[in-house]
Length: 168
Length: 168
DNA sequence: TAAATGTACGTGTACGTACATGTATTTATC
DNA sequence: GATAAATACATGTACGTACACGTACATTTA
Image (cartoon, rainbow over all chains, first blue to last red):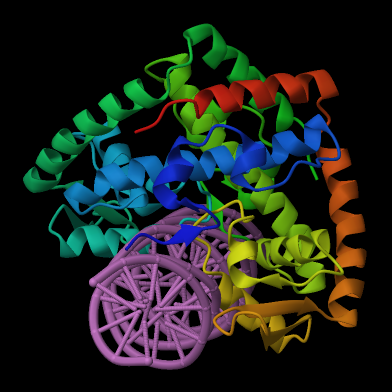
C-alpha cells in the first residue's frame, strides 16, 4: 500500500501543480518567501520523479550522477575529488557512493600512479552499459516532464542565478 | 579544516552565482536541462544557508519545519499525519523527527481521545520560545539573502508551477 | 456483531548528507 | 634533507529520506 498524506498519496503529489495544495498552506508572507518554498518543493519533485525511473536500473539519483560525471570525462579517469566538485549537492560523501557502485561492479578503484593519495575511478564496461540504458530513459523523461520552452528555461535560469546572488 | 572541492570550499560555494562554476560544467543540452540542474542546485544552496543559521539553535532544517507547522495551527494540536502532509519533502519520516524534538522537550506526544490511532503533538513552552528566536533569525536571513523583487518572485513562482505541470 | 478492510503510527533497513577525525602521501619551509 | 603544513581519501556518527512492514485501532461489509 502506498503511503498517504491527507487525501493525497505520493503518486498524486507528483501531478500536483500548485504549491498551496502541495503543502496545504495559503498564507505566504510574500511572493519571495513563497518562491523559496517553491524552489525546495520543485527540487523534491524533480528528484522523486527521476528516482522512480532510476529504480528499475537499481540506481539512486546520486549514483546515477556519479556515473554521468565519470562518463563526462571518459576515457580519462577521474579522482574522487574531481567527481565531488562536480556534484550538485556539495556535501555528497563521494567515497561512500563509490563503495556502492564498486559493489555492483559498475566502477573500479585504483590508486593513482602520479599521486598515491588519489583514488582513481574507472567506469567498467558494465557501468557504461547501465548508464547508456538509464540515461536514455532519463533524458526521455525530462523531455516529457519538463515541457517549458527554451525561453522559459532561460528565464528560469536567470531568476535562479539572481536568487543565489547574495552571500550570507 | 573545511572540506574542499577543487579550488572552492563549501563556504565559497554559498557565494557562487553561476551554475557552470558550481558544478564545473559548461555543456548543457538545453536551457531546459540546465534549468533542471539549476533548480536542484539552488535548493541545495537554500537548504545549506538556512541549516547553517539553525545550527546555533540546535535545530535541523526539518525539525524547524515541523515546529513551524505546529505553530501554524496553534493553539490547536496536530496529529502526525497532518504534519506530514504539510512537509515540503513528502517522504519525510515525521515520527522520527518528532522523536528528536521530544527528546529536546520541544514538543509532547499524546494519544488522541477521538481516535486512539492518532498521536497528537503539542508544542511546549520551550518549543515556542526556541521557534520564536530562530524564526526571527531565519526570516531576517531570507530577507538578506533572497534579494529578488516581488515581481521576480511572482515570475519565479509561475515558472516553477509550469515546470511541475506535467505528470509522469 | 463478526470478519474484512482501511488507517495511523512506530520501527527496521538501505542509502544519502553533514561534519569531524584519522592515515597516508605530497608539498612547502627552514 | 628533515620537519611542518596541506591534501586526498576513508571512516565514524547523527540525522534525514525512501520504503516496507507490523501493530493497534477504526470503519465497512456481510
